[in-house]
Length: 234
Image 1 (cartoon, rainbow, N blue to C red):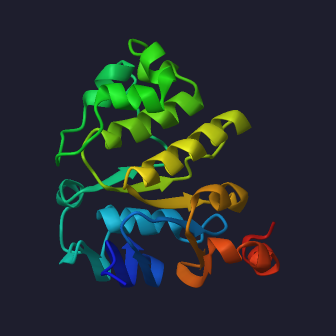
Image 2 (cartoon, rainbow, N blue to C red):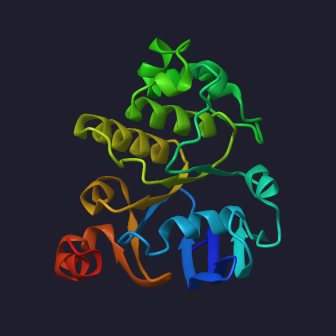
Image 3 (tube, helix red, strand yellow):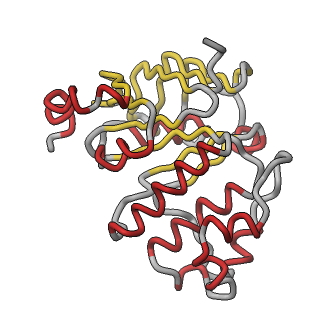
C-alpha cells in the first residue's frame, strides 16, 4: 500500500502540566474517511488539536505527505494543506455568511468555488447576507465546513460535526462527507455517534484515556458491536 497521507506515530501531548495523549499512532491514506471514536475525555479532540499544533508541548512524529510537521506552527500546518473544523465552529458574529466563507486565505489550488459550496449547502446561498451567528446550528456547521473547503486543503479534520444537530441535518452532513470522499478529499472525523460514523467511514480508531486501543474496519463494525459497546459505554 502507498505511504499514508497522514502518519502519526507515538504522539504525546500536554496542556500545561496535564499529559493528555500517550503514544497515539494512526495512519490515514489519501481518499479515506477515518473516525476517532471514544467517550468524552478519551483524547479525540486533543489528537486533532495536536496534529494542528494547537496543544502545548508535543513529542513523537506527525508526517503529512511524507514531511514531518510536529515542529511547525499551527498556521504552517494549515498552509501545508490540513483544514481543521473545531467543534465550536468558530463562526464570526460580526461577519455575514459570505464574509465568513471568504475569510480564510486559499492555501492551494483546487479549493471549491463559492458556487460549488452553495451546491453542497444550499442553505448558505439562501442565508448569504445573514450574520454568521444568526444561523441554526446545522447551518453554522455547514458554514464551518464550507469555509475550509474553499481554501484548497485536502485533509479535513472535523470535530463532532453531528453533535447536537437534528437527524435530518445529520443526514445532510453525512451526504456531504460521502460527496467529499468521492471528490478525493481525505477526512479524519471525531465522533461519539458510531452509528453516524458507520455511514461515512472506512475505518475507526477507538480511543481511551489518551491512547488508541483498537482499530475496526467499517465492514467489521457490526461484528464488533459488543466490543464497541464496552469501549463507548452505549
